Image (tube, rainbow, N blue to C red; front, side):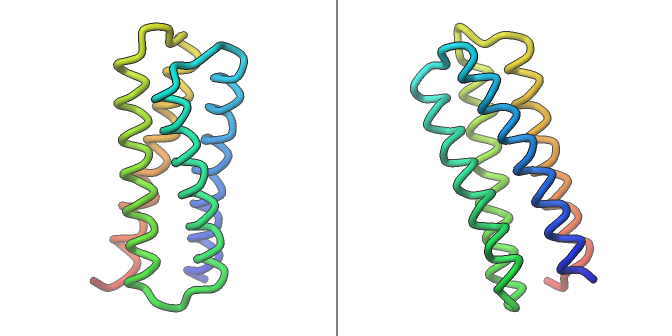
Length: 112
């Protein structure tokens, strides 16, 4: 059951990431922000794949931590961007919030 719940949480992060990427494509995002979003998208995909195949809680925890760090970086890049629209900032904040929820969920469900 944890595996399905984990996949669902990661799906929400990935969906928010895709929404943020679409918002940034509609307006020319700064290169550093674009790179941060691509890394975030990659980390979300990796976490999704690992949730499907990895039985090792330590590896899964590491993957989720990397995903949250990528969300932190993307939000920081967005907050320092000069051409960020309110829609783009809101999308980045949603991604960051979902990644943080995922990490907290994982910490509460999986043994340390």
